[in-house]
Length: 422
Image (cartoon, rainbow, N blue to C red):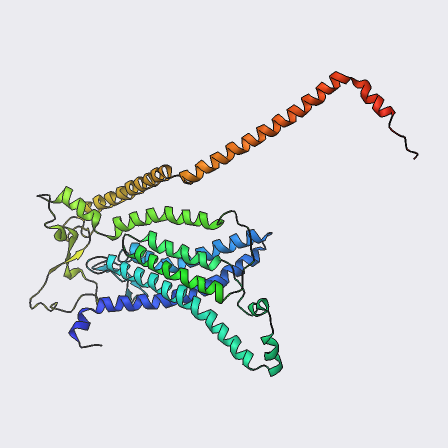
């Protein structure tokens, strides 16, 4: 609707950014809905123990929130622009709407926009504003209610002990929301880092701020939690390992299928006459005869060019209209697809091998701590040996006494023992 040429030239960027913001709002709302749904489903299962209930609730909540946050990103990265069909045979939804396509440069920029807005929006709104605003709002509501009480109650409140005033704070709801924030953030940082390399930097800045906000929340806004011994972080460790392994595969597919990295390599080493990238764009464009458009789908004549157009180009690997099999998938498509799949397999195995090597090089326990544990074991063994030697010496001394005085001494001592009447 705008007549500004600057606005009209950036209409695609404006539309994509607006859609990403609307999508962020929907994600934030559905996060709360999915949290309630996960708890309801877990209650229906009736787990036998509190630990089983907590693990099942965490797993369901993670699955629902993970799908909610990453489904739009996965759609843009792997499905958008690949289901629209071709000129003359477009795919329509409800017989009126064409499937949307990527820009001429691909979907990588749109993926970066969606990922950055979703990640930064969740960190700023959900992780920071909600954590500060919700407790403050509840505290304000309690303060307003306290103003309505009588003068005697206020005088009684002034005499309350510290633990009695702390009782009016918000109850501690557990660490599950805190872990969930970090797991979702870990997914944003690792799963699509190839398309948004600044994600780790923003995550680091967010966590620096998050530490102080959580400290303020736990000290001044929440009740003191009950102490409980924990052997490890529980099911969260398995979830982290799963996300890390999936991240390798997802990044391999992003580099291979979403970007033009593999098509460029294939053209340079297989189809380029001089080994350069000259002619790459022409290689990725197919031919189409405009007379083959379906009725009502052709552009307005004469394409605003001032002359008649008979052949146009579109981005795809298909046979030209004058070939024996017009508009069929060409052999270049299969060559690029084979290269993409080969890259995914090689990339995955190389990264997994490197992670195993790093895991083997860097021990789980630092060297100084392992030496201290080894010294403690030696001291414990020395202590046990000394105790065993002491027991052996005492037994040897008793045996030598018996050999020296004989069993008669013992019977004589027993005979002199005064008897008792029972």
